[in-house]
Length: 311
Image 1 (cartoon, rainbow, N blue to C red):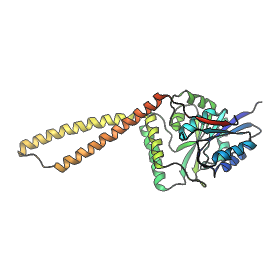
Image 2 (tube, rainbow, N blue to C red):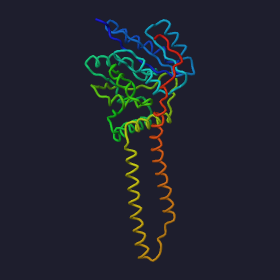
Image 3 (cartoon, one colour):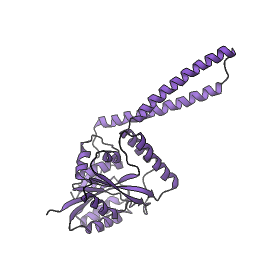
Image 4 (tube, one colour):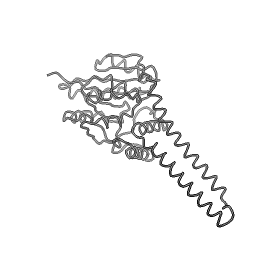
């Protein structure tokens, strides 16, 4: 009986301190099931500024299971990941970051679930080694996104997951070159299951993620799976119009009764500034949707590959 192939995909950006560790840990885990499965470990280097690519090339010389994609510039983690997943040829694909915050030891647990018939197996971060404020912000975002989304978004789920090749083929059909993959995968359907784990902090190197990138990722997730913000702007606009109309009636009545205009220049100024701010917020929301449409209409390639090694 022909062995099935498991693809391990790892996006890389300035991870020279972690590459050997993630490679060794994956190799160790996959050696436990080598009688049953072949495997490939695909690294996608997103134009790292350190020695990451050279380290990967040294590893690949001695291990034909390793394959490398080198991009011409930093296209961002989402596009790099999407392109890398499409290059995986396995019967199942496991996405695993290089920073070792997600435990490679869970790969075998994922595969066991896959063997039981699940097409997607994802890690659920029931807790994580992170400061209280950031942890709270993340949990709050997941739950707000779930409430306002038109589709099913699973809280506390990241990129650490296994996908059957059927899921990859379905993702290829979706013409979105900057997708919110967590939402896309959870809404493709088929049997899916989660495994809870504690997410550690990275031990080596520094993260390239900052608040702006997290905000950008979060906004993309919301506008990709919900139009409720546009509906909310309409409802709020109608509500403000109704309140303004009622206030006009009230001020006319007070003018007739008191024979003088009620004082309140400061109040009026505050109201003008407040509603101006509301208008700017919703103009920004509309702009985000328009930008999403614009980027899709250009039909640019997902990424540009500088070289591929081992394919």
